[in-house]
Amino acid sequence: MQFNGEELTFKRIFTFVFGLFVMSFGVSFSIASTLGTTPISSMAYALALVTNLSVGTTTFLFNAALIAIQFLILRSQFNKKRLLQLINCVVFSYFIDMAMYFVSYIPFDGSALMCFAYLVLSIFLIALGIFIYLPSNIAPLPGEGCVEAIAIVTGWRFSSVKIGFDATVVALALIICWLWYTNVFGAVYIGTVISAFFVGYTLRQLSNLYGHITGREINVVHK
Image (cartoon, rainbow, N blue to C red; front, side, top):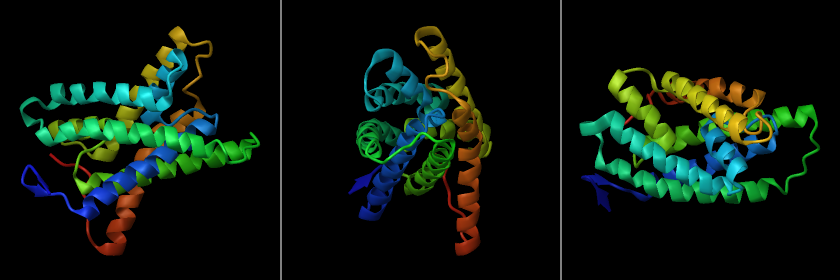
């Protein structure tokens, strides 16, 4: 099967879907940690809190908006293949609701140690999921798609742009909770701030480790 002249192999499709699956558990563990959800989903979680919709549903709505933003950033450089992100929206949103269901059955005592363990696990899973699915070059999630778009037009490093993008999304989620939710820290807390910096850092270390082991550089930015 081909799209835009590129062959969509089973391996590429599998790594793409598996990466989204891994990321969905990262999102779920960040929410379960009670320390604030990971930046990639802080906006969706804030919207879920104020609308009572599922996190998966608000994730789809927010990601759809991000696709439109990418078009405004890239303009003539907007590759039609990026429209596949609409499929990503559906798949990733479904995985998030499914992951939250399974994570809810894991015993959680609410201790500081377990909260921190969930936070660290969520950061690693988010970075690992990005590392797995982006190089398949099928289509990024809209969040990473926006980071890619900025990296393309500016030439800045992907991991560095991601840190700034995540921090911006966190600020917007905080404002939403402040204006329309009973607790200003409903979706954003100390764990969110930590994740905003360490997801990009962890992704960089995974890329460096891969290069050290294999002698090849993995590309996470595609035009």
